[in-house]
Image (cartoon, rainbow, N blue to C red; front, side, top):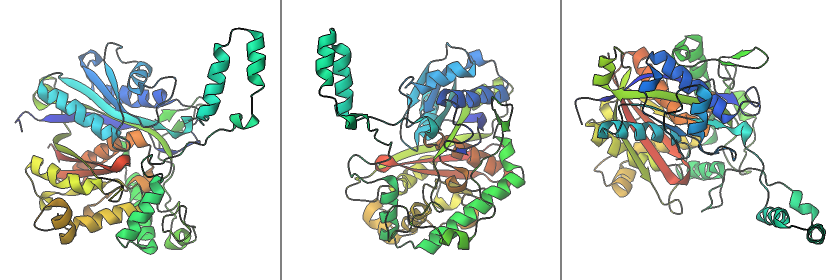
Length: 427
């Protein structure tokens, strides 16, 4: 690693809100533009100094699939900044950060923006391939006779939309089904999952009450003049009793419910990166440095879909030159409580380490007091393309708040991918 580290000098995210509620009328580009504009403004630099932007999204809108470019236009930043859209599922914005870091390290650019957005509210219903072919053929026809003859083959069923879903094309299982099966494999019970979810909600609530999130969450103005300046899904009044009344979602005998899973969410996040020497040159105070980044992938026909991060953790630690016990803070993506607790089982398993990772012993022991101290995706929400950026922000500001040094960010993603990043606080 170079002594001239790549650092984060500023970063923001929008509030994360339940899909099809207060951000329903905002496009992904509008949400992304908010964070790009605010992140740059908070840094206090001339926007013309920014060399490039990487931005993540999973469900890109059909009318503007390069959401990085569209968000840049919406932000009001110079149109001369090249922008590229990244899709690594739930780790998209973390991968965007890693991509900008690599470009800075290689000398291709000096300053870059990275982040991501997701607007589940904007996801549209699809039509079948048969319906698409029918209407495309109709559009090509030149005479009225051809069109009338073609419409004799019309079937009302062609108008039936296919509801958008989150399924693995390879296995045919939804993310939730895979997580439920994962929890069974690692013997994670329902009450354990509910307790984890309850605690995450309470920690997120306390984070807001103590002002932690105000360090990096920016309000979004509505057309009616209202300002949305707080995450909307946190339940401070949640309890084991309330969670226990919820029915399983994916299997009748399953353990995953709406209460111990992350909700569908709209939101955006971004950070501004440069070398430490550049920050000093510009008179900026860095918040944190990126120590390492590693990704891994598994065969989802043979292993649990969301176990990928456990394979990436040893690589990230090695690249950072540290051990598990050196870490002060863990930000673990909470797609589902069952997935988080299964990941903990694997991290703490000598057998898993030896048989799957080729290690002599377990990665380490998980300290709950160091893990998601301000809550995670279950209460805060999970806008797929923005979650990685949210976690980076939460880790670096968490280290500042706790006066600690090293943090690890772990993100499971569709396709059996795991992404892990190590960040270091700068005093």
